Length: 275
Ligand code: 2NE
Image 1 (cartoon, rainbow, N blue to C red):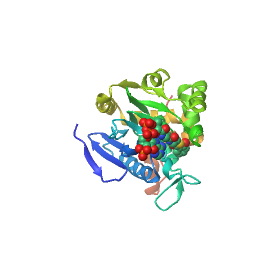
Image 2 (cartoon, helix red, strand yellow):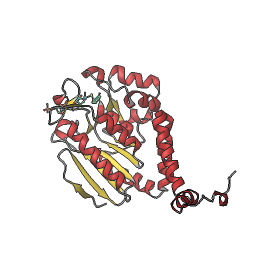
Image 3 (cartoon, rainbow, N blue to C red):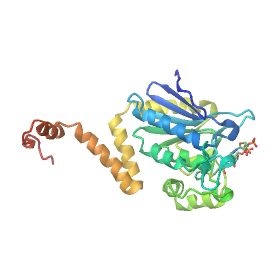
């Protein structure tokens, strides 16, 4: 495929090709650890992908390999700029804005696929977790480090992880802070597939193209439904928003609006009470 660069960012690369957007965390010297600016840029790119009606799938990945030959998806929050109450932005304000990004990825009405080569660690592990699908390279390494480095993610990082791998495994992952291979991740249902690192992007594109041949509204509602099962009233709101969107597309809904604008009573009798 031919990737078009969309915008010049400092911490990420943002590309598009037919139907697919690709967001690449581009701090390989830090194993793609994120700072607040990285998250701001990722959030802007995801918003752009959301608003572009030609885009149905977003690939999220990390730049690499670094000059030492090692790959990383993302090593979490940049510990070198961790302040007293979060990660310091350029104005010195402490932020945990990756939590907003997690919600943005989950509620994005398009499919987000994480392509993980090398380390997906700490907050970087949670980022792949909140993506709809994960394709791992054979060299991928997964793990949480919070209790080792003085942090934790008790949100999606804990409860959604437990939904995916089960309570026992999720507690093991957080309490022991071990690292897991791609094959181990596959065995515990943490990733969808494992491929050689050279084939990672091509495999992501293949999955994206398969998804793009499907019905956009069906995929959109299914994503919201999967979220609703885990996300309480916020999840229901998202699913319900899609019900409203679909209803707006009907003649029955349009009749209500048209009657109001024409200052006449609505004629809903023309529509059936379906079984
Ligand atoms: C990722 C890992 C296991 C890689 O190990 P290795 O041995 O391959 O590389 P090395 O030498 O540790 O790292 C290479 C360079 O990247 C920097 C390192 O400091 C090093 O820099 P130089 O010495 O070459 O200058 N680097 C790597 N990760 C970084 C990070 N997160 N922040 C800043 N610099 C980083 C190994 O590097 C590792 O364990 N990294 C730390 C992973 C981690 O603990 N992340 C934070 C978890 S907390 C979090 O993300 C979080 C949260 O829990 C809640 C809310 C928001 C965020």
